[in-house]
Image (cartoon, rainbow over the protein chains, first blue to last red):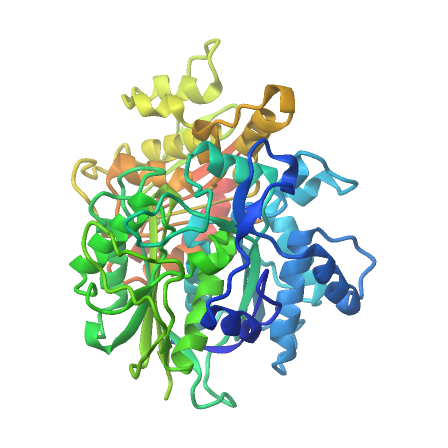
Amino acid sequence: MIYQISHNIISSLGFTSEDNYRAVKSGKTNLTLQDKAFSLPEPFFGSLINEELLDAEFSIINTKSIRYTKFEKAAILSVYKALLQTNIAADAPNVQFILSTTKGNVHLLENLDGFDAERVYLWKSAQLIAEFFGNKNEPIVISNASISGASAQITAKRMLEANECDYAIVVGADMLSKFVVSGFQSFKALSRELCKPYDKNRVGLNLGEAAATIIYGKTAQQLPADTIVLAAGAMANDANHISGPSRTGAGLFLAIQKTMEDIQPEEIAFINAHGTATAYNDDMESLALTSAHLNNRPINSLKAYFGHTLGAAGVLESIISSLAIIDNTILKTNNLQEQGTVAPLNTPTENQHCNEHAFLKVLSGFGGSNAALLFKKTK
Amino acid sequence: MNAGITSYCRITNDKVIVNAQTIDVPRTDSSWLNDIYHAANISYPKFFKMDNLAKAGFLGAELTLQDVGIDKTEPKKNIAVVCCNRSSSLDDDTAYQQTIQNPADYYPSPAVFVYTLANIVTGEISIRNKIMGESAFYVMEHCNPQKFCSFVRGAFSDKTIDACLCGWTEYNNGNCDVLFLFVTRNELNDLELNIEKLYR
């Protein structure tokens, strides 16, 4: 197992994990109709990080003469704020940076805007982020569609447990652009209003921008009693379709099975699922969770607070859920009116109290990828 | 065969090598990747709708598995698929950008967009071979055998995994650079050295 030392979220709901958690707990979202962004022919429903606020905070911490993109600024600021709460020297050789992103600076393909053409490469952004903190290890980039943020945490766990490093700084980030939004629009995957995860009338997802960081270490030394550990994590493939979710949930079920080997369903406080609010994803999850005998445990989705934050989602949603379990709280699924998945699920529509010490995070994505992470409170 | 690796395949712009044997690929007016597909006598029509990165990875996996003798029809939970490259899906990203660049000629295509996720290649390989173990896609500046090996070793930390189909899977702007390997658990010790040797 590996230990969460600190974390941060930069999103439309705030620039700290705690601000984001408080907003979610009070039922707030900044998902809204975006009719001016990216000069798209049709509007979309989503949430964007306020660039003026980001620039204002970034300019205070920036010590370099390099010009950064919004994606890089959000990732750097997120890591910076997570590091502030620790005494870790980020430039030490025992610290490994791991970047989770699907599209990085892809918006530069439309217009380089004075940036070097190399900036569209994901490893280049990762290098700039690590170099900002003086870290000289080659950063790792994982680009695994919607499960990237879970894959990155599993990679961190493996590297820490193999003694390849003592600290792993996992940062997940993706920004929206004409490229990303038009693609999801072409898929007819987007809802034109606030998304409705697990609802009978769900019609599609919302997109959101975020950068989120978790710093992991190998030991509990000097950490508070109610620290969160990543106890297990696994991935599996549906081997079924490159863009459509499995009709049986077999891949997600397999990932959950591997993750739940040493724990019983009744020990799980809640499952923070992917819950994109597309018809097929949510049905698929209901089948996989039923196969795993988890359909009676409380299940929630955070997508109607943040939208789908792509490469940041696995990290961001793990952080919000970690804060929730420390707070003994099961967060409701926002905007869920009438439960309606092919297999019925226990999806609370009000925040609830919980006493259990563990939660499960699951994600599924394009390429048939599925991931499950088991988190536990140390106390 | 070569010591320490069950099977491997190397594809560059001018040659295809499978387990130290150079494969003869007759050139036609079609693309290099299509020519390899025909030379290898593969029958999988879905190949032709793939983007170049998926085609390159698919061919690397097909040729690597040619003599391994895995049953493509039976679901397998004990094999992992791990790919890495330099350009992620930049080749298809550039193609997709063309479809949205000009407002007068705006036709975003879902068939092109889906391949703008780098890990789709791992999905294509998993579907073709019914592999249900984990699949992961990593990006790095250059093929670094030490990092590559660390990712593969990571896949084996899942104790249900007995073998890993792994590859440096680079395709961008007409430049193909692929090294695929089928590695079993007891071949991990020499893996880094073997990747270094075979990639050269």
